[in-house]
Length: 295
Image 1 (cartoon, rainbow, N blue to C red):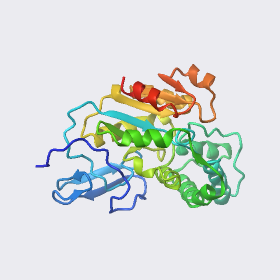
Image 2 (cartoon, rainbow, N blue to C red; image 1 turned 30 degrees about the vertical axis):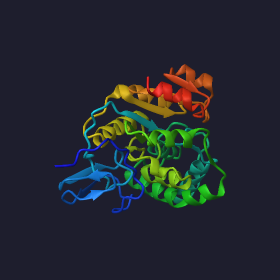
Image 3 (cartoon, rainbow, N blue to C red; image 1 turned 90 degrees about the vertical axis):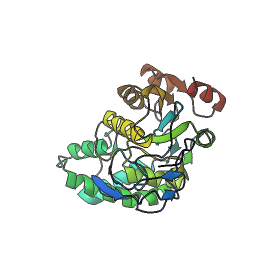
């Protein structure tokens, strides 16, 4: 059997094996018999991970060999406008990808804030009468992922206030796990977080590869949380942290609480109207946040 151990936050960075990139759908992984990777022990079995609700490293074991004897605090972070500002790199890369692949200008009236990448693609297609097929989305996504790194390099962005301090503080705690609830496609999330040296903080999440509706991404993130915690995880102990009214809405769908931060395109009045549990200017007030999260 597995050795007993205190709960650990398992980083997706530094675990060797499969590439984090794979096509949408199931990937089957067979683990070795009780071989240990950093802070993880696995028994031999076949695991299946779904693309939009999976660990950031596809070879991260489905179940952690630890006994969670205490209530685990789960933090699910949005990316754009919450953790980082890319200076518009994501939208610029999408616009260029759309024009390159379909020889049409990207319409400027398509909303991006809080939307999933699959939903944005659908809206772009509908605006020009393009078939919203999986094949067309795969063309669009591949072009976007190819162009995104260059746009991240060229456009000036930053990690938002308080993010690094909060992530460092939470990562050091054995009763906290940190994941993502983002509209980004999974590999887009990885590219953005790697660019700002944040990828290693997040071990699992829900992503925008398949669902036009962010609420469905929240359900994927909840499923990924339960997978990461060996079937455990109380919705009352989950906090969604985001910068849009859609982040607040999707938190409610899974029974989670929400911290809204006015670091994106929505001001505090707009966010307050959506009734988050907590409303902050940013994530810089660490003492206040820690008290709230532990309440």
